[in-house]
Length: 456
Image (tube, rainbow, N blue to C red; front, side, top):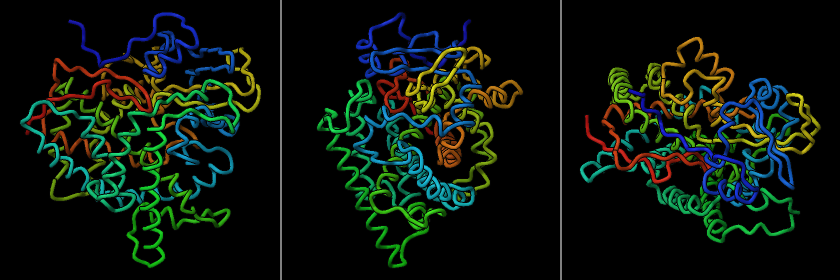
């Protein structure tokens, strides 16, 4: 009997026009791509306005992300769609501005600081278990809503020492859901070369929700600045970031700069973690034996009354489940760079200004880089072949100097919350509501992830 595989989008079957591709791309990034990308080392896409090269060969990815990152800055095409919310955040900047931002942000996510914010993660996980308990008995539970809620709770507790049910935090979370419903990843200016003065024709709802989120974050930031000045600020991530001067310039973030960074912490830290957790739970529901192993590990090493930081290091299988979920469903499916000088990749000319696309989605399922690429196998990361594939072709947090500063944060948060939920509940599939992966800002399920939840 053939093994049931985790759901995967059906790629487009043939060549399409640019405008048809743009339409498919707006509906779902993944199914808009051809099947050959799961095997090719490189693929070229031509439009009347720019040329695009997707690279899957590990040596080329190493060149772009690790060896010469300054020659391949982030493309402004992604910034076009996200600018109303993110402003000049570290996610979209390049060059000296980006380096200044990282010199201030990185110290907040060092190992010692993660130990300090761990109790806040723990409290968010405990609160999530209680919320799920309250939803049992009324039919299947939509788990993406659950994981979004707990991931946002973690962000606010660790950044500003406030829970998600705080008035302002709750308003940001609610407004962000409005933003998600109206924000396409593809803006017109991402396809057409447009001068800065030309209108971007963004939806009014998108601009209004982005402005509302930024206003709420501004309120929190100004309140924290006042508390810092008064000497009453809690020692959390916001205080750490706002009081850390750039070691080269001596400057700290002003209010506007901090608002930009908090916006990306919320978008990236909350949205990506929610995606990974949702798919991890779905995969465990698909594979009950793995779920039982996570439950056993969590029962053995997690004591609900004792939030020991050392417990997370013992959740080895749970961590591999979370890793495998991010391999099969990388939260950020594609990243785009732009080459600043002519290149020669695989005996092909890559003109200056080309779009260099790195696709964790295709890389993580590449037929020439992974054994059984479409299968769920958490134990692969403990094998020699799996470790080699991971080193060459596993970039859920990007890699090199632009690796996500919160990667260590996520690898504590994700396994902890997963263990706490599976320790408390059993999750089963709902046959009539299968998950269908689609990608916009992140990889989510088209109609949500619905699971039957029962107490253990």
